[in-house]
Image 1 (tube, rainbow, N blue to C red):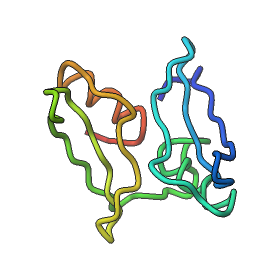
Image 2 (spheres, rainbow, N blue to C red):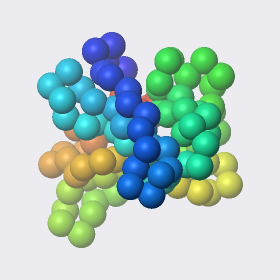
Image 3 (cartoon, helix red, strand yellow):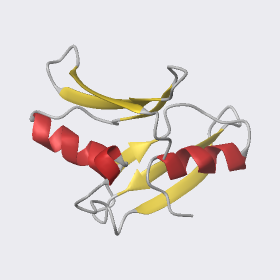
Image 4 (cartoon, rainbow, N blue to C red):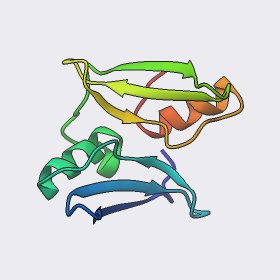
Length: 110
């Protein structure tokens, strides 16, 4: 994880909580894939992706998928043990290595 990343928890237009992670240059390098009714549920999902170092070890049994999207860009998604998608890349990457680096930033162990 990049120590200079900033985490934001905010309310979206529907009044649900979401998180996003910004690199030092301001680019979004991670974001929630859904809105949450409660701030604490949103924070739990953000921790799963590395916020505060994930002290409660959320997502230990998660699986990771790497794939090419319709435009040929490399993307990742993270699934909980119940197969629900709990995270995904916020953008496509031109190469698999760059995609995996972004996934590592969001909890992928390689």
